[in-house]
Image (cartoon, rainbow, N blue to C red; front, side, top):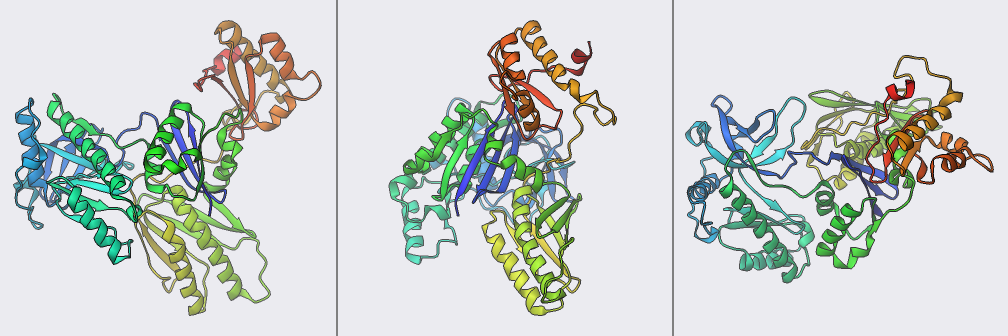
Length: 524
């Protein structure tokens, strides 16, 4: 299987698509100014104690206070708390971790009101982003994740991923990390560390320790709370850190700054693979060039077709996601209804496993497969679904089909499910049902171009239009596009974009910022 990462970096947001054998399997979109990412560490203040929930609410700067349960404080919370107090009481000297006093571990059955009080300053880390009306979910057990290792202050133990099966390798890694880790730190060795040399692991360990030192330094110098003490790496690098593997054929980036950031990261973790990072310079939008836009349009929405007329209906609710499997207009197979149902269900399992990753659906997922009478078929379907989900990084649990033909899946939810609106609002009537004469559309475009060039004084810009309209304006020996260039200058670039509606258009400057040409200007 060949994996490719396509990164579309725009001024307001970064969108990332992961292709496996040219098939879209993961899709993430994040604003450039997005906050409260999983992994961010804050110094915040306790705002409310909720004894009935054995939890509290903490102010970390979000419009809704973040939730912290007693069980999420971590066994070593008292040691961290004492260290934070020591830091804030002496802002001139940074107390070394090696000399930090260790406290007794937190009682697992304790009460939060005996540990925390309103107004208390604590260090917390986000484990779940704000979802709908809920604020972020927090933990008091801090961690700094790298590609090979996870560093945990005051944890002390060294644990090795259970996915590393070799006893000799597990023992080697544990002994190696024990010998190089600083005092009062614990380390989790990740699966990808298998077979890595001591120098590589030590290099990453020092980087993670430096991240911790920078983090506590910000807390020590803070004059006002809450404060962001440690920011998780950007979405691009964060995804790379978790997903990167030698099967990557290429990482395509359309922004030079992000390209340099990604190339630098890859050169650190896998110098021999540095050349797979490529800067995309084409005029066609990067997602159109790699056929991502079309897959987004077909992969999202309420109804998803997968093969031979069969389709899924996916509904999202606050509590769960519901998936219905339909055979559609598929003809019954020669082997009868039972085999036909089994074939449709197996195809549905393939598409469902992809959809869970693609939409990042979390929580409870209930799937209504087509009824099958044979117990052997039901078992094969369950085993097939289990096998397909092995590639899913999110923690999950799958139950066999119930007697009603329902399969229940729980999947870790750390951020809202990705919901892309594939239905397009008419860009020319805005839902009113009537539009101006379409034959005048090119006159409208020319009026906009004239306004941008002669009124706004912008000589170089890009016009994004539907591919069909692009074909029309480029038709002929002296095309309409060529006449516009001769009249308004050769700084005009027209680019076909599959994401545009039929009579939709968008003007952008050469840096990718949208040029706002409102409807009012058009009607003057």
